[in-house]
Each structure stands twice: as C-alpha cells, then as structure tokens.
Image (cartoon, rainbow, N blue to C red; front, side):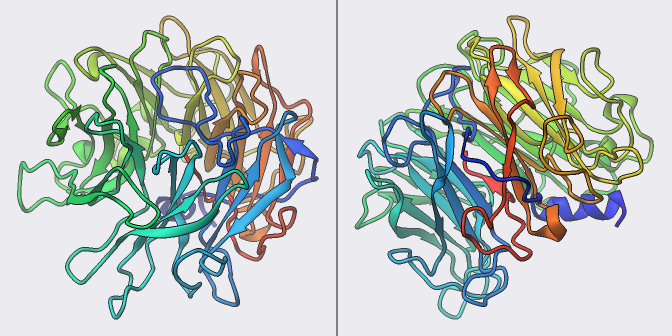
Length: 495
C-alpha cells in the first residue's frame, strides 16, 4: 500500500500497532489541556494519585460484531502503567448503555474530566456509528463514571436524531463559561455542566466551528482541543477545520478560536497572521505551556505536504509542527514557531509522505516545568520499509518549542521492542502521561497497523533529559485480554 493510500486512511482513523514483548508495569498518560507544563493526575479514574491510560479500539470486534468498538484502560501505579490492572469497556459491558453492534465505532472519540465533581475522572466516549431508534448512524456520546474501583456504569449524554447527528470524534472537556462546572464540546454541540449520573448534562446547545463568511462553504473538523490560552481562568476552545475548496487549496486548512467567557464561548474567529493571511491549520492539535509563561500555547500538527497544493513549500515537505503562543489577549499570531525534520537538532530528514505532525500530545516529559511535544511521523520509511513510522519528542523552553535536544524512536531503535515493518504506521497517535507520579510524563506511542491492523502501544519511561528507549515496553490487546483481530488498538488516546 502506498503512502498516499495510507494518508487517506489516516484521515478517517488513527493508527495501528504491533504487540511486542510484554512487560509488567509501564508508564503513561494522555496529555491534558492545562496551561502549565507540569503533568497532573487529571487522568486518574480511580483516585489513587496515579494517571491512567485509556486506549481506543473502535475497529474492535465485540460479541461477533465487527467494528463495534471498545476502550481498554490500563491503570497507573508507583512503577508506572500496570498491564495487570486493566479493564475493557464496550457496549456489552455491564452498566454501559446500549449494545455492541456492527459499525457502532464505540471509542471513536475519547476525552476525560471529572464531570460529576466527585473527585474521580470520568471517561467520555463517542460512537459515531450508533443507531438511535430508526435513525442510522445518529451517533452518541457516553460518559463512563470514575470511582474508587475504577470506571463503571455510564450514561448517554448526547444522542443524534433525524435533524442533528452527534459528531463525537473530537470531544473536548473544559469549563467554557467559568461557572466551576466542566462542559463537553463536540463538533456540533455544547453540553453544559453540572453533569449528574441520573440526568446527564444540565443543558445542551448547538455549536459550530463554521466561520460564517460564506453560507455555501461548509467546514469539516480535523481536531479540537481545550485550554486556557489567555490565562483568565476560563477554558477556551480551538478547532482545526478545513474546506474542500479546490479554487483556494492553500487556505483550505484554518484555525478557529472560540474565546471562553462568563457568558460562554464566543463565536469562532479565524486566526490570522500579521499580514492578514490565515494561520495554517492541520490535522492534529495540542495545547500546553511550552515556554512556561502561564499562557497555554497552540501546537498544530501539519502532516500533509503543503495540504494538497500543487507545489510543495519546502517548509511543509514531509510535514511540520507549528506553535502559536498564548497571551493575555489569546493566541498571539505575531509569535509563532515552525519545526520540521530539517530543523537543527531534530533527527531525520524531511521527505515527501513522512506525515510528520500526526498524533500531537503536549506535557512535561523531563520535569523542568516546560511542556514538551510528542509528534508522530507514521509515514516515515525506514530504509526500504515503507510507512514503518517514527515518533519524535521536541523540547519546550524559555524561548518556546525548539529542535534542540529532540529525540526520536522507531521500532528499529536499540532497546525498542519489535521490528519495523511495512505499514505499521508507528506514531499515528501519542500520549504523554505521568502514570508513576514522578513529575515527568512518560511517552506512549500507537502503531495501529501493527500485526496487520491488530494494533499495539509502546511505552517509554522518562528521565531528567526526557523519554528514553532504555527499558521501553510494548503491549497489545492480547496482553490486556481484549479482542485482537483487526482492532486497530491505539486508534486514539483519551486526553
């Protein structure tokens, strides 16, 4: 399969991985949306002080139903992720609403937050293919509740109907109106807190990232993230969107910013550079404070070579990561950084089809207080092995994101389990999470194409200099007692 074919597939799903040698405890955590570069335990579903990792497998077979989907959760411990302390959640799990059916895609969107305010993180799970009554593919969003014993029970908090589907691929959690209760944003609606286990969300209103400049132009959503960009105590919402406007392909990918206020989210505005041109969007988005100034920064992955333009800008060859820094006035488009594989200090070389910019996650991986950035390049060829994939970690610092000190790993790196194989697409998704609560986020990397699309995840422990291949581990669905065949385990991580 060619890189271009895999690129098209990656737009629809996320990634696959091989199940390598198993381990005991590993370390992990999905990146959060805090302004601080320090890693918290916000992914702690059982309240033991250690962050947990939720891994999506929306292609997984449940009860004989193909692509019904499931989510595997591995719990953190003093020694990191403990693959012996895990659970698999599907719509056939006791207490979870619905029933597993073919093409439900349960797990096709994941986020987390303490929605009911009981001190335990809850898991938000999307199922874009769920039928609601006679409405096919209406889509649902379900909250699975955290507690002392871990995740259990759930409630559907949004369900589509004939006139309004639920688009749950990019759920984002934050307090968007500053009332002290978390809210949940999807591509097309805003669920306002407080949430309760009996009633769900307190309210639901429509939400759109369409910029309204032309009623005939429709925008598709590539990714959504939440964070306090202006450090005013209210969460802001950012979306990467695009049109299929063939006449102006260079501006087809944009960044929409919705400012959080006491009255709720503002209308979306396009981020523009000083010269009036739009800040280029991408397909993957993370938010975190990479320069430790107290403002959350936007980290945009742009993996498509020039986003389909006929002539490739050398800066976009092979993909790019861009940063727009936060300020008291929101995203400051006069202060930006762009990094690719030709940037000094970044391992590798920019080549067409590398897809550098996939699977962005943001958290402090070395404990210095600056958020670092994990970025995948699942289209990376390793010698003659096409689309084997790789991942890089870029360091944050006082001057912002830099290529200096960057590290890169793939399945042929010494100490990394497994072997690079064609179409593994290692690096399709990443997560930075501090599962052992040592103040440094460990790196988790998915390769959804591993073992002919069964999928797997790799864990890299972190040191004072960042992630290291030494002592790295891998685990797949079989390790966790989850369905294996064509699961594309690692299709997403909760964040």
